[in-house]
Image 1 (cartoon, rainbow, N blue to C red):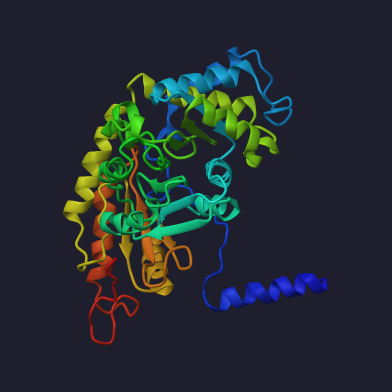
Image 2 (tube, rainbow, N blue to C red; image 1 turned 90 degrees about the vertical axis):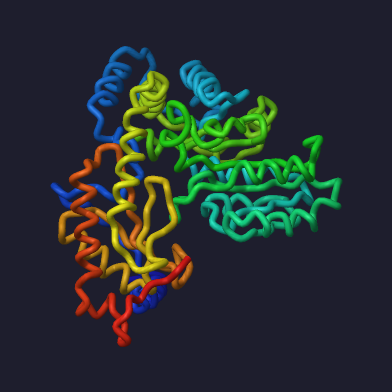
Length: 407
């Protein structure tokens, strides 16, 4: 072991000691998925598999990428796909990135001009933070999660700076809490402060809303009819669409600007044609309306989960999306619940600090189009049973009350 390896091992040992070590795990076969972001169940879909194999068989392009988008990685195939995706989401233009992280970091590191201001929901994705950190923005100001009054308080301070652009960064469905942003209220605020749309711009991350919300799964922005009120949107393909990559939707000028300045796009080998083919097939299935019954099924099992679960007050996240969560106080507590459910045959994962703030640790539960009512009932019964076992030292405090945290 080299001296550097010894330093790295010492750092890892510190993380192990405080029970915050991260590990790669392989889910056992035969278990029931209540963890992945495969909200529509398309990763299991024979229909998507058949369309994908047929597309690969019929396409005249090679399978690999051969280079970055600006060198040899571009093609008529991807430009046609971007045009179709833009039409589907009712946007002027689209630009595909290798991942949602690349798309967000590329957008937020380049879009703000020197001295501009970014106001962001405190729970936005890490990729947004990465982009903001590298940006030329003079101020990066968080507001309390989905708190319109707090956002208004900050806007009151920055609106007088009329010569600066102000960007509001939010998600539609938040990845850890599962709640939906008050998007219409945010749009109304921007219209109040910038009635001529001269300096205030809304940027929306639809990563967890894609496929689940809106007609044919177009997202929350489409469901609310706010396409013209959002400057830029991000949709990922790696969750409900069972693919990989992401797309930025916006104006043709924004697309050209990102091609010229977004370093993750410029300096990365582009995704292979096989990935583009899978994205194309996923959108074909969305556009055909074949996923709408799955969206309806999701609503049913989400309601069933929330109606039948029995938890201490403040323990269940306030979410109407497929992302649900049981909040306990401390990494040890959430690991105990997750381990209990894993042994019962359910794939769920503990989300520990520092991924979420200390005191807000939770077992994250995702419901999917491939989950049945019977599976949901079985999961709920197991969770209820865990909390009914009053002699469980992880769950119960010395005062014999549930150790739980209200968000």
